[in-house]
Amino acid sequence: MNKLSATIVSAIALTMAMPILAQDMEDTITVTSSIFDHHGTVPEENSAYGANTSIDLNWSNLPAGTQSLALICDDPKVVEIGMMETPFVHWVVYNIPASASGIPGGLSSEAEPSASGLAGMINGNNGLGRPGYFGPRPPANGQLHQYDFRIYALDADLDLDAGLGKYQLLEAIEGHVLGTGLLMGHYERKE
Image 1 (tube, helix red, strand yellow):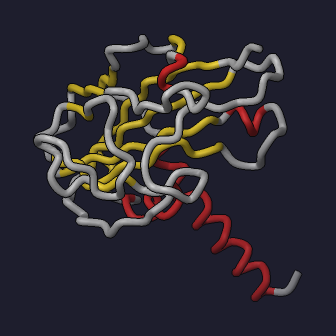
Image 2: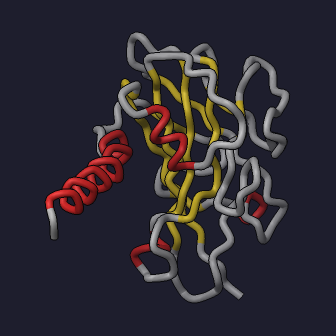
Image 3: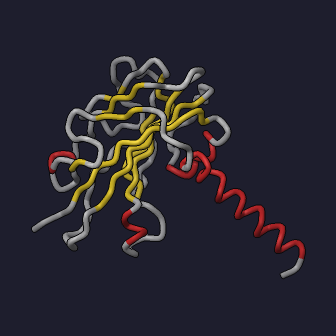
């Protein structure tokens, strides 16, 4: 490998590693839902097999200096079992005001949903390339899938444009993450 190729490979590796840094922070924000506990089961209604209704989320213990929040929900199990090369993205939300203590269930899938106290919030693009929530929809293959609802507290109001997916959002918030929190749910399709 020549020097230029090695430099390019190093730059790509560094760029790919950057978003992972925020993912690897110790979780200090408490994230809950009224419909399942941490490590609990996501209800059928909130799956894409059911009504595909987005779950409610609440959070507390935000770090001092939090100016806005973001959310990413994905399924890392698809990588572990060899279904996909990267986690499937179920929900991306950003420009959440720091004053918000949660997101209501049943949120519209519009790019700019209307919800009390959440002015400016954006539904980013999920793994289907569409805005809004896409609930669990694993195949009936005997595998229990994992859904990580991760909240990011940011030190700035980044006022990001609509249409960002997970990796674009992670790139935009890198260097601005003050803290994270996780609510993990599980779902298995049984027929």
